[in-house]
Image 1 (spheres, rainbow, N blue to C red):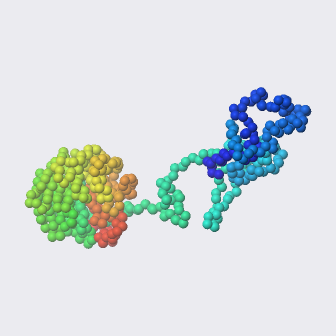
Image 2 (image 1 turned 90 degrees about the horizontal axis):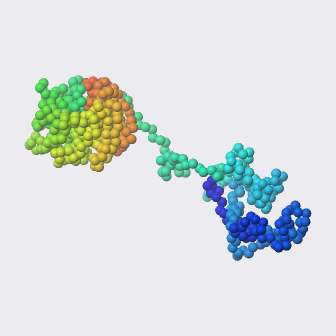
Image 3 (image 1 turned 60 degrees about the vertical axis):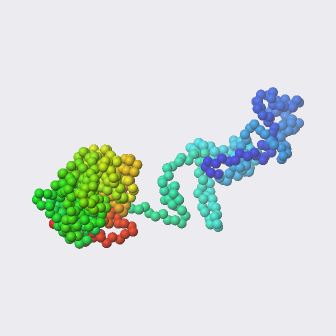
Length: 526
């Protein structure tokens, strides 16, 4: 019998119970005039202490209480009283026998209800019930239930003894999420060994390579580092652009703009063969990296070009003149459209992975989203309270956009551009300079400036920190990710480039373009 189960209340088959039910009329009163005694019997004759008690009177009493009465099996018995039946009780649960007739000098039969044929057992049952209801302090020790065994296909299975406190409700406990699964850890299947909990991935806390980058500018609004799909790193240093081959560690000087100009942004085309260079004079140059030859120079901006973003053959450039120019390098014109909306310098530009949406951030604390044909932003987000330079599209979920604010904001915000909704916000405690999403796992990395100059690896969507990397002594203003998605490079005003292994390798790819640990050490990029 389970803890919450109640024995079935079926009518008793004993003749004593049946006769008492059938002989008592419904709605009976307790007055002496309603005892329904025979005419020749007085109330005093019923007293057991009456010396005039005779056998004739005894026979009347026997007939009244129904001694020797056997009802017909086909007769239905009705009653206004509820008399619980013990025929369905599980006495074996308490190591008792319902037919126990052993006499006891303690008078348990009278105390337990004076049942016919169940004196000592009923007394023990009453004592046990008292212990269960009022606890062990009542002075009654409950009998222990022996453990039982059951067989299943010939195998012996040990059953745990049921709780003795059968009238207490069990409180619900909060189950873990895994206990609801058929393969959960709480209720493991027979013969199935659950796998141990996966240890958190360890991210090395120090860079495996450091490059000197003299004249790397400490300017929040510039974008001077980019990593090509061909595993070549482009860095703008002063008025020059240098290329560093990650496979061979070879350094090549791509161009020199002269003393009257300087590099403000660099951006690799999708194929990795051509590099766009934005200058302080408002021009955009296209260079063939393999030949170190300038292919084209495009104008249109009045002030410096601090942000570049490629989408197939279309190049977007953002300037301090508050405008964004769309340039098709296949067309003869310098630009095919002009996007207006920002009220200050455009410092962040990123195309989505499907090349359908362009996100832009500005020094006006605004984040805008444009489509391929719009000249006005289709989505406007104004929640940031500082300049928005850090922008990253998720490669795992369509329409998921992350953005970071400057010193007065310090927050990373997430947006769903499909539903035009703000998803979440995380206060990082420092100026957010850059964001990049891992292609291999659902994680992202952020670089920071004032005041901690740290690099943080986040797990999305919980935004739990996997690692906090330190080493730069200035704001970590520049960030790029390797083509295999495992390594990031960071640049700062301390004139160093640092390489970190932060993301795991792709599960189905063995990249031959990894930067090996054999290239440890500090070298100079020029």
